[in-house]
Structures are given as C-alpha cells and as structure tokens.
Image 1 (cartoon, one colour):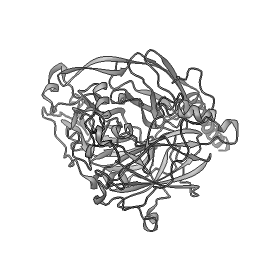
Image 2: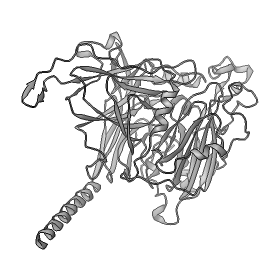
Image 3: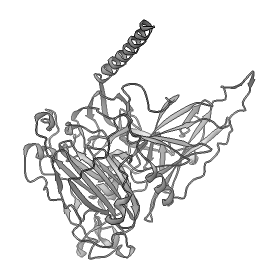
Image 4: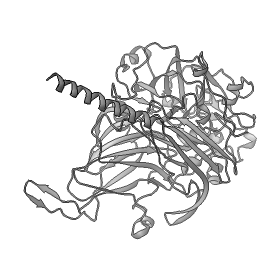
Length: 592
C-alpha cells in the first residue's frame, strides 16, 4: 500500500516535472517574422484601389506566440509613406523602444528603410493585435497578435477551434485623400463598408456571388464549441456583433480572462479585443454573423453593416443512440440576427459595465488599494480658433469655421515632429525641448461637463495646442477619472493606455460625483483592460500601477480624434536598479 501511494506520488511529480519542462521550453522560444510594408492593388466592391499592406495581405499576418516568448519582427518599409508598428496591448516591459507610436517612442521608418522590433511577451495571454501607428495607415496595416498559454490550458474547456475575427473597414479613398480630409479640420472620409477578415459581405451587389464573393464564411460542426478571437480594427466606430440564433460566452477582454459572460450581442470599441465562445447548437443551416455600428452622438457616421456566414457542415451527421439521423442541407438563405439600433447606448453600457475579471486566473492581478496619484481628466471634442481672414482655406472646415481640436484637460496634443528626437529618446537622454512635464492633473476650469447647453460655449470650447506629459514615480499607483464632456456632440470615447493594463473600477453617466460614485467602485474583480469606452455623457474610473519606465502614450482610439490631438502621455521614471530601468536604444532605431 505504501509503495502504491509513493508510486502515485512519484508519477504525479514526474508529470508535474514534464509540464514544468514543457512550459520552460515554450518560454524560451523566439518567434521571428519579416514584415514587408508595401503597396498592393486590391479589389473590393467592384473597385480596384492601391492600399498599404504587410506582406501583401489585408488584414496582415496573424502572429502566434506563447507567453514568455521573445518576438523579433524585421520591418522593411517598401511603401512610399513613413510607417511604425504598434503592438497594441503588449506591455513592452523595459522595452519601450518597441512600442511603436511615431514621435513618441520612435521616429518613423522612412520609405526604403527598416527597423527591427524586439520584445518579450510576459505575464499575458489571449488576443491582442498589431497595427500601424503613423498617419492613417492602420486602416489597412493591422493583424492579430495571439498569445497562447504556455501550459496549453485555458481556465475553461478547450474549444474545438480558435478563429481570428478582424473587424475592419474599407475606404474607397486613398491615404493622401484621407490625410487631406483630416487636415481640413472637419470630418474625415466615411468608409464604404465594414469588413470581417477583410471582406465586406454580401449586402453589396458587387460582392455577392461566385468565386469573387467577398463574404467571410465559417464552416462549423454541429455540437462543437468555437472561440472567436475578435479585434476591432475599425478607424472610427464601436461595433455591435451578433450571430443569428446563437449566444456568445465572453471569456476574455484585452488579453485578460473574465468571468464567463453570456450575451446575445457583443459590443467592442475601436482598439479593443475580445475572446468569445459559441457552440454550434442550432439546427443545421446557415446563420449570419453581423457587425453593425454603435454611434452614440454626432450626425455623420458609417451607418453600414458587414456580415459573414456561419455554415453548419451538412456532411457531419448526428448520431442518436442507435441510428443515424440524416440532417437537412444548409439553407440557401442564412438567418439574420436582430440588430440593435445604431444609438442603443443602454445595450452598449450594459455590456461594457457587466464584464468582471476571473479572480485567480493566470496573470490576474488584484486592484492596488493605496493610490499615489489622483487625476481627473476631461475628454471631448474642442475647437482650435481659426483666424477670420483665413476661414476659406483648407484648414478651417470644422464647426463654426474653426478646426476640431479634441483635448484632455483642455490640452490638445501635438506630436513633436521636427524636433529631431522622439519623446522616449528625450527621456532617455534627459533632453529638454521635445516635451514638457506639466500636463495638468485636473481641468483648468470646473463646469457642468455633460450639460448639452455647453456644446458651443465659446468661453470653454477652445483648447490650446501643446506637447505635455504627466510625470510619474516608478511603481506609483495612479487613479484616473475620465470625464466625458458635451462639447460639439456627445460620444463614447475609446481611451487606450500604452504600456499597461488597468482595472476599470466603475462607469456611469452624468458628472462624476466622488461622494456617491466612489461607493460603486469594484475593488474585488473589476475588468482589466488596456482600452476603455468612456460612456457617452458619462465617466469611467481606472487604476493602474506605473511599473514600466519610459514614455507611454494615452489616446482616444477613434482615428480622427487622435490625429487631431486627443492624446497625452505619461513619463514613468526609472526604477532604483539597472534591471528596473529603460534599456539603451537599439542601434537601428530610426532617426528623425
């Protein structure tokens, strides 16, 4: 008996040792890729257009890694535009030189030149993505970045298959046209279609039939469970995602595990990622998966949908105890799901606010309880004053013949182009003249932020241009109240923090009230994200630990907002030791 028990113990430790060895080997792997950024002619919606791609693909290649891997990506810029690549949601712990936003962590890679991104993926698993972080190039330069568990195990039953779903959009305008529209100070070019994995779907007559069908199709086996690894790569809008007659179970957001959340509609903001399970448990047939817009404010937006088709494979029969049940053939007319109205804020808020983190899951971290820095940051669409003598030129086509100047705490950010160095280089070299460290911790004036009567209040709406950052002590804990404002029109702003995840403590509508709203903070299992939708006419509170030295961009992930200044940055000081400090820049770091 003793021998048998010891043999069991021995076998257990042997299995554990093999698992540990396998994990160790996986963590030591190096994943190396070549990205050739190049123009390619692509046909969509009956039109050919030259777009910028990576390796000729739209969307670009999916990168698969395991937690602990080292990633090396050699980027060769063969396109006629400056480019950088951002690894959205990857911590870049002590490797800020690889983060990617132009003029923030690096100068752009100019046409004909190259740069190698090298970083280690640590303490993360799930779905993230990569995209261009220069000009408007992320419209076509993007792809999934999937971090697989080192152990091979999920905190839920392993799905039958895992499928990347890249939600994007298609613009008939080219890069120069889109840049010109943005420079004019008004609304940018509207996209012609949303896309699912690069395809617009069959609602357009040009994309419906035959070998040239531009519709994403996913074949499934009845009874099997699939994991959709979703990315919202759309330039401007939040999306509703629905699948006719099926529910989703959300199991992760922004590469952090969640308590399983069952829903018939997913809401995903620009820049966010999400892992959702669904089981093919309906009668054999075909079902539309639809991406439709959520737009809470403003008059002009891309009121279009894209749809793919989930097809049950009729070759697979069902077995009933003792006999074969022959299935019917899939319907030629896929079933449509119910689509929420485009301005369905209650549905969006219910989804965004009901997600909670899975306590004890791999890489889960508790909420830090002691706060060192409290910040109150207003976010919204301000204006930059145009000289009345020049209102007819191409830079004053915003509201009231001024230029849109989105801001945070009434500071509208300007990238330090033409100053010779990126902000991270200036940080590393302790160099002045590139940026200042006086970003305010609260707005200059307190007012009724969400009152619609302030929409065009000329005493409040103008925001000056600056390149300001907030300086943080290493390892300090920061709490931010993002307060939406009603300037011009209300909107749900997707705020993305580079270099860190954060806990979402609470979200609500109206003006944040510290007396009553702090009582709503979830300090036990709040969702953990890198991108948060700040509710329309409302607020969101986040908390994070500044344990990663460098300069880290914070911005709205709506493209024309960030393009016009809806940004700021944190300068996080080095830690007390060499191992907690930013490493020197790589030899091939691009020069300005």
